[in-house]
Length: 114
Image 1 (cartoon, rainbow, N blue to C red):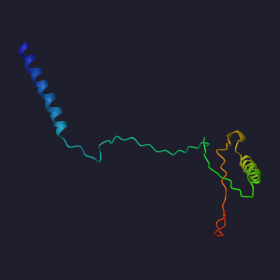
Image 2: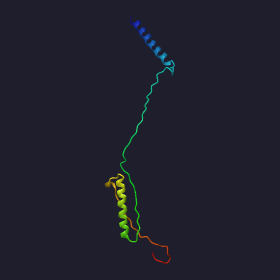
Image 3: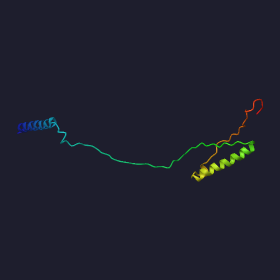
Image 4: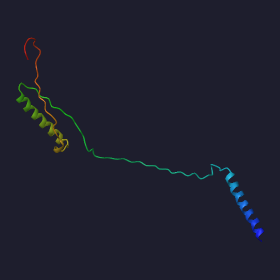
């Protein structure tokens, strides 16, 4: 009985190996083979309010004296700030950077000191 089981076991193992070998050697038909894939289709948008905008603007004034130039400058700066505030900019977000005053010389007449 033991020898019959040994032979049966050998034949069973041999038969299973033959079946596995057969199916591993059979070419797979690509038309009938199940294809595995992942398809992702999407669309998106993102919107955000800008956090920071940096502008550099300048005001230029000329007049006969520094006092009148400074007064004109202050009027123009006030107009510029008002325009920015009217456009929706918060007043606390508006800063002034610098002020420079330089003399203007007239070199159009030779021999006359400016």
